[in-house]
Image (cartoon, rainbow, N blue to C red; front, side, top):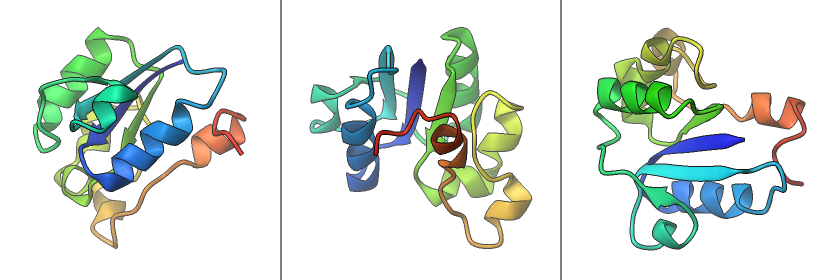
Length: 113
């Protein structure tokens, strides 16, 4: 599975660390990432708030899953722009308290226990 994590903070580092443990993971990317994440994933120089840049990259690289960490891209409508490429809350749902959605990966047995 090819996965793109959006963000570059401690939360995204923890997500990358856990995803790296999955045998189902083929490639892991993070936009923009940070120095700590660089040891776990390929960091892509696209800011989390560049929702169209993120969507274009995810589509061009044929990502199987996009995990959005920060609230700002969710509130800006990143999941709406991804149009089904990733998993997360839509802009409308994010306005009601943006949260992380990892249900899809758990339901598919991807998220390591």
